Image (cartoon, rainbow, N blue to C red; front, side, top):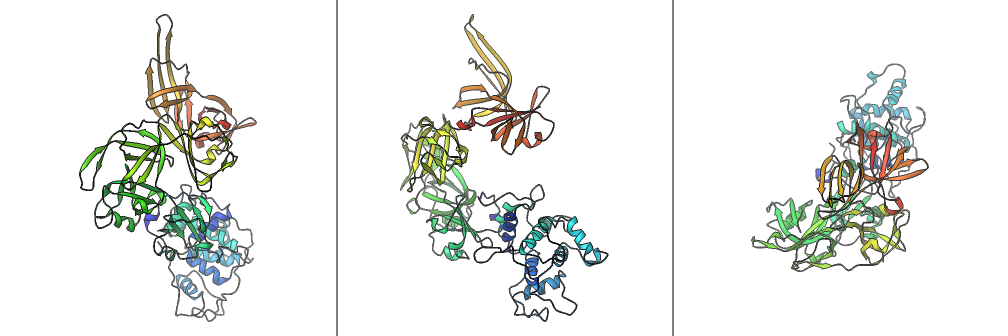
Length: 617
């Protein structure tokens, strides 16, 4: 793999607003992003790729060598051609390309680096990169090469003729298509077999994995010399902070920053967690740390040193972890050195926990486990011994740990706009955290999930505004229904005898392929088929059948029933029904075939409802 590929530490999954799924070349942006990340085609100082500009032979050879497995130095002391002296900027690339057999000059002994390149000339060089030579083609030049160019689908997105001058857009598509074309030597896609990058299951460029492999960092804003570590002017970079496109002016102390020089881009994360250190593993060279009942992988050597037996912090200390991608620890600070770190959410457990003090002694203390608005759970010791499950609390960092306080109720209502950016007259902050709750459990939801919904006062349990007056945290009460259990009831037995004054019910149900049984004195008056179950703790509050709708077609996450459309829940369960039995399957396997689909929803979409179950017959 080429030297520009970074440590596997950066190859973790990345959720970025600017990353789109890799596709065949139908998106100019996708191809441009991939080639920029690979340093095959880079933009000017403003990031402009100038795709309408013609390509010279020298420029194409530089792209060619960037796409090759050969590393090229910045200088050469050899003049590969009389018109390419050693002082020419392209001399190292031309020299390397000639040595590799990718390119040749003209019969008069010149290379003509400033001449524009034709499509046929570029195709020949690209085929040589794939392992083809002149001996692989018969007939007059370049008929055989152009035939192979089409056979290998190198022509996707290119409309010019073989003798036409290539523009940068044509070169971009040619190199992008080359990445998924099979190498003649290995028979496998060039990107994976030669350059060592992964492809998707469909054999397309895995843009996400590729971006991870070309990113650098992290640094923490505010640390000494952090700007000097980023090798470009951040004021001109594209910046994505917590998934929202912004500018470098939005950066704040303790933000965790990653970057790509080739993309001239920054990705910024602001997550923090404060609490007592409960474990460091291993002590001499830490790879993970447990804080407030949750274990975090350590990402940087700086954080590892701070938590090691030679560093600043030890078990029992209260700290603030600065978290980067995937929740990994980028840096560690004392609670007073990093702003934020408070957690608010729903108490889901109040069971005493075992802790370790600074002297290595174990002790047991009253504790609460909080399902926070960020969707994670955190456990804190507390002096309070009677915090009930289902209570809304806030854990606030103090010098001695975390103080757990009850949250007061709040009044807020209004309609969420169509793009999910405002609730009534208030905007959602770019990093808003929303938790939908029921009883002692809940689920994190995102603003777009609430789009178009009317949020009543009875649905809002708590909200917090940031310094701009935008909603930064929001806790709801059964607004979406996403935290409930869905599936199919396969067997019902109910007894409701007035004569004997006895009632009983036995219900067998399947949820996500797991079969369970409910038995007791409660009769729920349901029938077999798709259902919803609401629970508060271990108690069942409600068991009810879902509403049926015949589906005529499906497009993405939208189901159509005649002239109406219904949103399909992201976690919808799909069953194939055969001989009265239910077999868990997927939507992709039952659409577009001979199946008749029926959807089952819990409530109207404007009230947050979704199709939760789909049956295919």
